[in-house]
Length: 615
Image 1 (cartoon, rainbow, N blue to C red):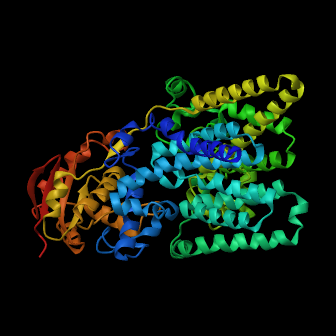
Image 2 (cartoon, rainbow, N blue to C red; image 1 turned 45 degrees about the horizontal axis):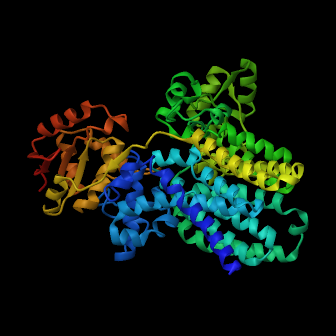
Image 3 (cartoon, one colour; image 1 turned 180 degrees about the horizontal axis):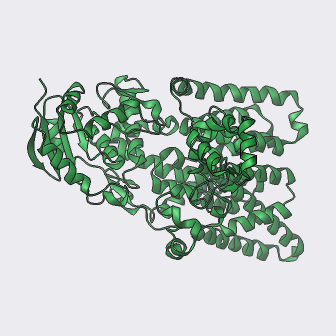
């Protein structure tokens, strides 16, 4: 009976780690909880792309479609799905939800589950090395709501929101170090694979961080054991078996196309050291003041990628852990992971608050010497030809950072948003802070042994207060949301003969919304969602549309199978896009002056047109 009571008590802690994030998440996205089937977090940005991914995988499973080719966008050419992340670890996991309730419900379920599973993963990991359930629960909640997580919730990028696989992988590695059983290494390999299938960024993050964590955590005695290498090979085989089938189409696409980014462009998505100490501008108490008075916060208005605030209390707790914890191997391992996150998030070049590379003037003679030696030409492909020429003409040099050593490598060079490495810092600092709290509790108990019960009670209270303060540091105002439902014009299109649709204007948000609309009306689209690597046809067709009402442009549209043109006004869209409001009036005027285009009328908030000039 006593054993059953202990088992039930243990299960309660696990349930708390899974369920407590939900009431904490509700204030951030109340509209999503209330309108679960029609509203998603964030404005109309990448979130719609991943709603589409949820739909597409459901279609692949239900109809046997090609996972990596969509014929219904950029019709009739089609869209290479390798231009975006299919995030299979999430879209496949929630495919039953997609098939039963639709992609919007599946997307929202995946988002909410990520907070619960991240909390649970952190709980398991921290409990594995502290053996304190309340402390592990507090670390789980803090880890689930780090600024990285909530920033991408606001940004709508599911591969980054679904960060739960990282702490779960670290937990499996920690358990292997302690138990030295092959099953834990196999689990670690499987979780490593799920990280890659969630986001290719996570694959690179853990390729750097997991070996560093494990080597420093395990120590030489374990690394010298023959059995370990056999177990490690099992883990590698499992990871490769999961990752390789999905990775091959992306690798082939990388060979066909140049998907590398210049260091100058990567710098736009990197941070400088001050950003780690800059609170978020969406904090309900001090956010407005930070936005107005902190130079490092200005870019957060449009660029959530620079929200990498480490948290002052978390940093303090991590420092205590580094100094006081007796688990020296673990502190070194966590310190290494945090360092990898910080150094990599700063990118290949030192940047200012706006992501512009910091340059220093040098004598003209030195520039000429470097030019004659061929060094400037040698780095031209890495920095970018235009930026290299600018440095040459102005006689200035950039300040390279350690990440420059790997940023030119084939896979690394295709990762532009390097500030995402900050997730490693967040998780490692949270682990170190838990070690710091554990060390303080141990010292308190040693000093006041006679007052054991009182020390335990005060320790529990201190943990709760510290967790609340850390969460409050990270808190932010509710996230804006996007309503996704069938428009009246979608109903009209669904009842029309087959023909490709063009939605105007051409800004990114409008095009993303048109991709969701296609799920409702099922007519093909002449354009699409672009993705990180837009297909060449995207630019070509946009150029043709800009030539309207020219007759040759109309003829070209006919070759795309275009039959319907829709202009939709979204009054709220200016909050999420740089679209000029005059674009709506411009396209109305263009279509009215195109003889081959006939206006059907206003349907809801949309103007519908038919292209009659195609024979």
